[in-house]
Length: 359
Image 1 (cartoon, helix red, strand yellow):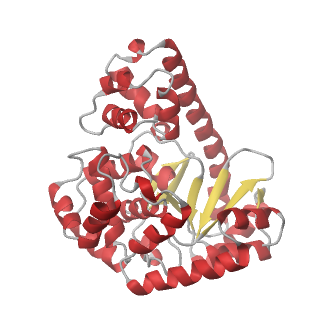
Image 2 (cartoon, rainbow, N blue to C red):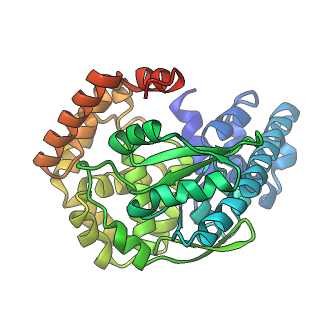
């Protein structure tokens, strides 16, 4: 789809000053698919309804958008049905757990979980309690990885997916960190110490504090190579819209080795939703020279995304290294990737070997 249609969708849902009428400029046969792909169908439907514009959509566009909203609601109900027993099992086992990403954002930032579609539920547990967490989930009816498979996930990633044995189509991602080892250095113990209450699935769970939640969303965006998925940019727009304190946000970003990803997240949000990020944070981002250089040399200002020409895998690996704050982290990440690729292959190879039981 053209950049113009994506920009029209961004304008229609923009926080603060949305222009829902911009959605009427999107071709009727494209609007529902575009909103679904960017995971903003519930937001778009809400904006159009509030503006009294739903009736002006072509029938096929209105029906497609309605189906996308219903699908998002159904997915949320499945995820809540899965996550509730999981949180209960972790609590009963005495394993601390923190909700991440959509599960935390839906209530704390959006004020309505139905507006924030999710594909899974992410939960952070202490690194030393991963095996305890998986044992508790196993006893609660979840299909957890065996020791050999878990060893692979522990070496290569920072989370592992689990699902219920009863076939419920919902996935729980169990994290022991929010970043790959050697690539960034988040203060995971601090995340638990700064966690705050966050109701979800009828339980009183916990979620990261404001600065930590924003930093994790920026880090998540960087791990997806600043792909312009509007829901992720909207998350950050809302978080920046709360005008977080510069301290601890920017010093913590530097301590985690992610000043560049945070600065690029600011630039990405401003491109999609101009004027959303408070000026003092735009100034802090502008002071990160390599972030400016990357956008100027590798970006395309005509695109909604920062680096649209860097979507191929070989380009993404280079981009990932260039967005690391510390040269030593870049060297460690490259060495780790080469070792993993030599043993398991790249993404497709790893997935295939897992299916075959090789890892």
